[in-house]
Amino acid sequence: MTVAEPDLLALQEVAGVSRETYQDLVTFSELLVKWNRSINLVSPGSVPELWQRHILDSAQLFPMFNESVERVADIGTGGGFPGLVLAILFKHHAPKRHMTMIEADKRKCAFLLTVSTALNLNTTVTPKRIEEADPVNADVLTSRALAPLEQLLGYADRHLKPSGTALLLKGRTAETEIEEALASWSMDLKRRDSKTTDDAVVLDITHLGRR
Image (cartoon, rainbow, N blue to C red; front, side):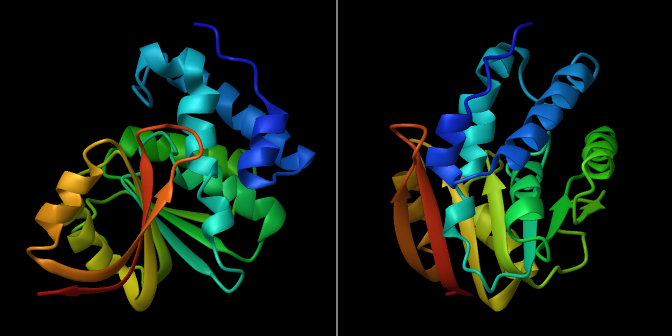
């Protein structure tokens, strides 16, 4: 199945990436398409839209990181979104920043390790369920297309340091999920419009606590 042509200009607009970053993302996308023939890393129907739907969508989180961030946790990384995309961006623009990717599917973990090794990324791959993995104590936690917000906040509470930030990519159900989560959680919440999808949002959450 044909993959849409990578768009360097779009990547520069969304995340300010360098040409070297772009080349690593191209390598990542080629490996993903190859592995996707035997492992369902992304739905086959979305492969032609891989760059817009998955890579650009993940890359938009990068400018939201403060320069002081050292440790990042991506939960339920799957095929590398947003974890591997961000790790590639970190390599070229914040090389000391470490990415921990927590993924229960060991076949997907093998893919994450293969890409990390091929591109010399500063990552750790944890092949465990999120609720069973040792707490990461991350400065920032990320997630994309994983679970309802209330459940994600439980994971964030486990893996974020008290002063940490959760950056969660959410779709059209975001407001309903926020309303439901507020029954159990207190937080400071900012809504950031998605740069790639009209009905999507990035939830920027700090000062998370149980009610």
